[in-house]
Length: 60
Image (tube, rainbow, N blue to C red; front, side, top):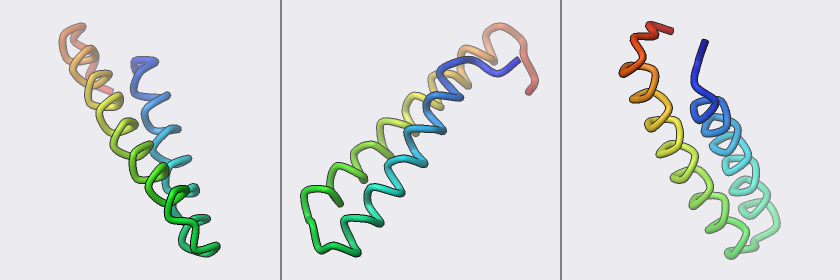
């Protein structure tokens, strides 16, 4: 079973992409920056979850 951090990280990354796209469409630079920040945070959280999976011996 994948670590909870990986699932949350992937969701945050996707949400960040949507936020960035909305910022691009509306010309809202703050929203675009928030979306990029959410993506970075999601990628980090996903990586942490992957490390936890590796330490537990999960191969998924």
